Length: 531
Ligand code: CS2
Image (cartoon, rainbow, N blue to C red; front, side):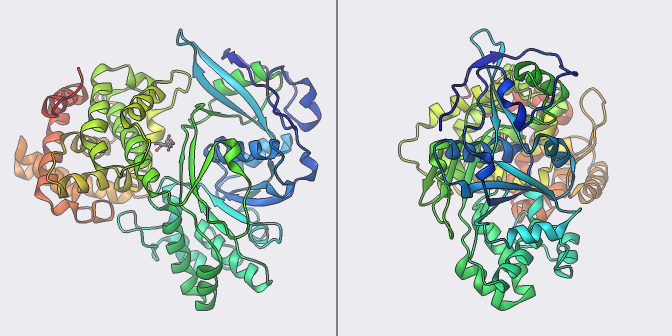
């Protein structure tokens, strides 16, 4: 079994509307240099069920799993994907019998976009949960299934982002507790599926969260057990004793696929693919080696098995995702549509470099062998990748679910050590200011967030408080105190006068000076900002 050598080719815009569709029967006509499944697809069985089959999972889990199969891994480790909401992925991939293209995009020395293509073959089937929840439960309870993995995004866990507890008032959880045969949430599917499994006398599973949440395995375990305890104490005991929930850290930037990307992939492939996935070449996946029923050897595809993922998670969530969110809100308001466009703004680049070095890095746990300065420099280069065109609006989604682990934990650690937080405060103020839904040029945008209603109500109260307090810093303080009083996101941070003061100052800068002025003012307040 050999991987066909991959070549990088220039990204050529355009479309091939008349080209035939990617399909197992057409692999022989693929353009030379495109990697393709060289293992026996027909022999694969679905040992992994993946909930939340978005581009992210197809850009890392499936790609790494494919590499393990190429390296001669067991045929038991094929993948069954589950979409929890929509049919679009299944509709795109079913006519291709699950095949899709992964395009790893980078730039050449002249900054021209290039891509390396690989057709991924390990996805055997995609189920659409709302169409047939029984099929999903049956898959979780199938004898072949040994791992259920998840990328359902932060909000998919139906938890309280500040405390990590299961939200028993969440409409999907309320629904699922009463619907053993037709749940809607990931946690509901897991618990009702595990109940069937136990009743059928089948073995335990590994439940593997791949989402950007701190201690994601432990969090998932807590949520699953909290739900199971509502159903049957014996089931909760069985899950807690037999199933494992390894924590993991995954790092790969996977922007949303556009029609232009579909065209460029078709040009290079020689076939059309209804839903290729784009990603950066960089991939880091650290996963705790606690599998209840075996696992593929993902290390051949770049994964690292570790005793403890926590230090890697903290590093990644605070650096990669913290800086990403800081960049995203400021950029949406400034009108910088893509991350590479934002990175071309010298003040923003300097701000991110200072934020990482001066405020985030000192809060990180020691990781032997890690050169943090090099890590930060590489991260800035990853963001600047001009071939990804990663939309800042995409990263700006769901801020209420992202703030605690990306920025607020860092803020807490800094305040506990009595350290300044000017850069972090600008990032938090950026999110709050962004929630007003209008950019600097007066263009309106919608707020895509599960707490959008609550946030809008807060904003109304905050604007009123600011009016009553009068213009200038007094108004900014009153406004910020209201916004940071939202405990579901800020916990008790809103009662820390140092935090509220720093965020109010940054909010006032954003209001009076705009994004560029606020960046300059913040940089002036951050010691040792790079020139
Ligand atoms: C991003 C992440 O959309 C977002 O919120 O910050 O998806 C980010 O690209 C990945 O976590 C990178 O590993």
